[in-house]
Image (cartoon, rainbow, N blue to C red; front, side):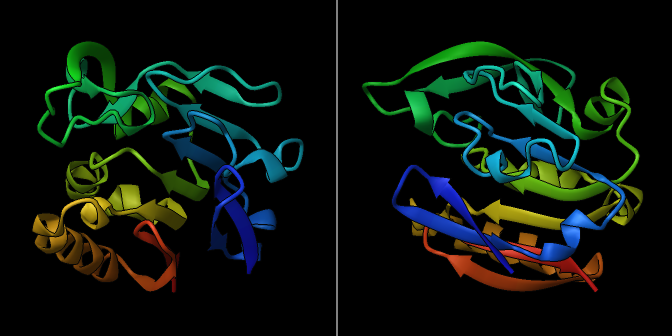
Length: 187
């Protein structure tokens, strides 16, 4: 297992080393600061998406969100904690950002095989994973995901449903770090 930095200098997760020998690319959804995939620049094709992020040399960048619709999605904006899933608080504002579905994102970037899909999309992981088909999952070897039930325990059922869905899709699940990080590895 490779240890990966997820948040600055203070949080880490893990991925399986086989991603380096797997024939797919790395997709980083919620790539805001690119910390998760920086160790793989130059080793794998990397594609990231984030409505508020910036491009990174050596990676392909999509400025927008990947979710359940093709069009404009309303996102609660509060910097790094922006979300299409959680209800805005008094100090947050809602803005429209470009969103594409997983299938359209794959078409736009000619993605046919994914070694690692990293999801840290502030609650958007629940509807995204629920919207993926068995064909989508068949093309993804491992998924590193931060489920956001640690923010609000009311999302525990959504997390359990997503973990169950991943298990049914043929992944073994390991909790890898704090902040709701799990690794789903194709068995």
